[in-house]
Length: 338
Picture 1 (tube, rainbow, N blue to C red):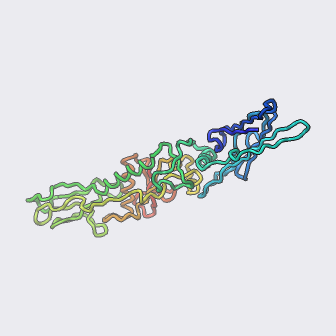
Picture 2: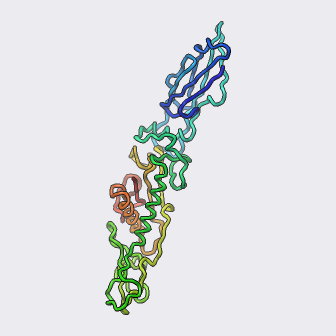
Picture 3: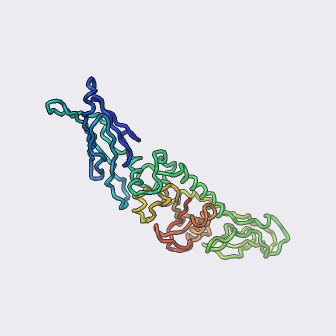
């Protein structure tokens, strides 16, 4: 007897997918209607199929999961079934067919991940085309080697856009007077800091040069205010002379999280943007930026997100559920989403 199995992923599947088996009896097609099919679950994570048994030349089964949704930081085990086919013969004899290895049905990693979304009942139910190997390892903070994104490449684009905006804010002082301008009052502003940010105000990114003078407060010994022409009345300072450049992906603390991992992280959001490939957590505290405290850097990142994504999609947190002001010493990341 020849047996074949077909389905959305051939021998891989998720619960609810049709798994169709077909049998053919060589030189005895009249016996095909007697074929007895059984899809037997393997392991406690696998539920009884619907139906459990069937008779005929063709049978369609649907898998069931017994996996919980309590959250974990390890991969789920795959759902597994053994397909058994028997053929009753005259005289009460039963022929059990030795099936080829492909009829031992076991979820591949892509479908183990997709099964989580089915188990959790999320709005986003990824197809196989939504599941990919991430272009950057930092984008995967889930339990698998693959991630699921509603829009392919969205996380990588979000990192790049945030990177561009954060670096723009770290170099946004304004050259009010061209370098070399003479005949200025000593109190003339040659370089002014960029627009004020959230709760921390304007943050300068320039150190005075020549006999120019810093008129504002200092952070870590570096000027964070306007630069004045000074006693000689000459503008000698180039704006943004600290030449700061950070690689934001070095400070991504969380990106894609599969539903089990998301729950284990403490998130109560069933449809979290992290599980949809639409959110980043960025922890700028390890950044070493002259003249900026960790709290100020947190505000810089939140402001960058506000500009790109809107204020409702950029906010500072501790853990997954505690919202804080960006300059709070207790904050441990900025969450940005789209």
